[in-house]
Amino acid sequence: MEHAPLWMKHTERALDGLSFLCMLAASIAIVVLIATFGWLVFGRYVLNVTPTWVEQLALLLICYVTYLGAAVGIHENTHLGVTLFRDMMGWRVSNLLKLVIDIVLAGFGLIMLVASIELVKFGWSTMLPMLNIPESFRSLSAAMCGGLVFIFAGLRAVFRIACFLRGIPYHEKGLF
Image (tube, rainbow, N blue to C red; front, top):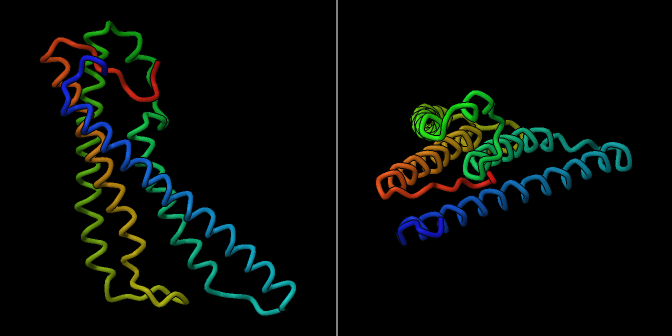
């Protein structure tokens, strides 16, 4: 984006930072997951006392790893996608399809955010067994993912439109 407006470069840098923080949080969650399973094995086979809370914590951590990783995949353009037909089209149709895809993804993220917020509200009074924290912490990861997908895909759509209006190409992350 060498010819992109300054606001776009600053916004992209901020989104890169947000993406990095999401990946850092997911990475820390994986390390904690591995460490707690090590404790589970040690407790079960060495101490002969199984720590029962590990499985509930693992379910919670897997939600955060999955949802944060999915949001980062949207930002970095590393998510699974079938691009055969889009890439076979001319550059104008291809760019239009990319814009439509970004708008649809942003809409999906917004719907996911709104629906997950309802789940967070609903589960706040129910506690997770063994962990004694609200069930909403599981749904919070989905709400975070929805919000992040909305931000990442929505701003990429805005970038595409801004570049189109300026007559410059938009260079996507993760593509050559």
